[in-house]
Amino acid sequence: MILGVYWYFKFPENLYQFKFFKFFGGYGGHADNGAELGTRVQVDNVEGFIQKLEDLKVQFPRTYLFISVNDHQLVIATGDRQLFDYHFQLAAGIEELLLQENAVRLDDKIPFKTKFSKNYHPEKEKFETIEHRFIQMVGSDFKQNNAENFSIRIDCNLPLVYKKDFINDLIPICNEENLHVFYYNDYDFNSQCNLMLFFTNGRQYKNHIQSVNINSFGSKVRDLSQKYPLHFGHFGGMKYYPLNGPHIELMIDENHILHKK
Image (cartoon, rainbow, N blue to C red; front, side, top):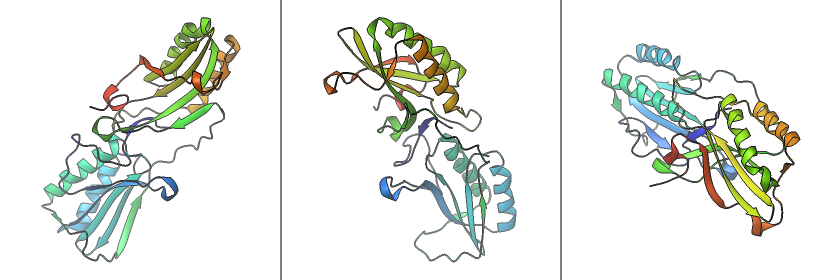
């Protein structure tokens, strides 16, 4: 599974500029749909241009690419439930090809009748059912450049005397499981501590995509419950809800994860 910085509702302002592509945000909720980068263009040599698109797509095996053709007109799109940086890098690569072809961007409102289409899917990844009920997969509110973040969240509690050692033991697990961001909120009361733990990664580029095996990570966290008197969930009611923090243990791309300027 890919964790980290992504865009779904809004465009990554100040990070990318496109002459041809438009960003179409997802809706979420009951109308859950993929966000999309799309364009309608006209090129002279459609067959040759499609071959160039196919050659470029090979460099982006984790993305969709949709092409619809009507004579010299093409609709080109890529999209998903989460658009990571590598989706925008694919669009930027297509824009370079369009500029080389002296392509003309067309009005989206003009009727378009598809004569044939080509769809290129991502490489198949093994479907992973999350085996550990204490793991929650969560998004975030907007950060810098409209970024969101896809993270693992774990709520737990343990006696305060074990807190520091427990946190320290989580760091090498993160290193082993390809997680580069770890921060937490806490609430200490009496001799007890409630914790809200977050694990994720930063921005995901074409040549630097970090995959995380959620179940391997979860198994190692569960093993710590044998070492410490650790319980999943929070203890003591809402007045002890862990809102103090965030306390950072591992971090990259902080402004896209914790802060919005």
